[in-house]
Length: 141
Image (cartoon, rainbow, N blue to C red; front, side, top):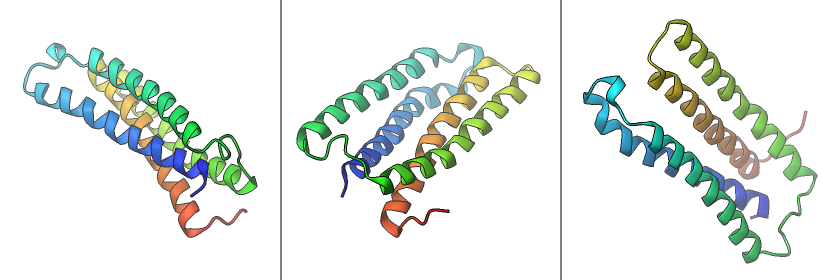
């Protein structure tokens, strides 16, 4: 398994775990009025925590395999580009969803969560596309 593929697995795990923690903190509050839901701090801390864990995980990954760290061949770069292009579609979908919600003047809780979900789905779909390309092969255009 290449260094880039290990990093992809790490990023995918962080995205799933971080969003799961957020949902575990926010979903129990859905029985109350939307304006009373405390979602801002959990969102900020799970996003910030994911960033910190990603940086630390990258450092640990680099220490564990120092010869492979930062070395990406053409195939790794193509797979990365391929996965990022697929994942970016969900950033756009989340942005359009948030725009529609704001035009409908829906509570900002739903707008924030639509954006957050779009970002998380972007990361997860990107990881799935990359891992699929690593495992099943990647055929450039």
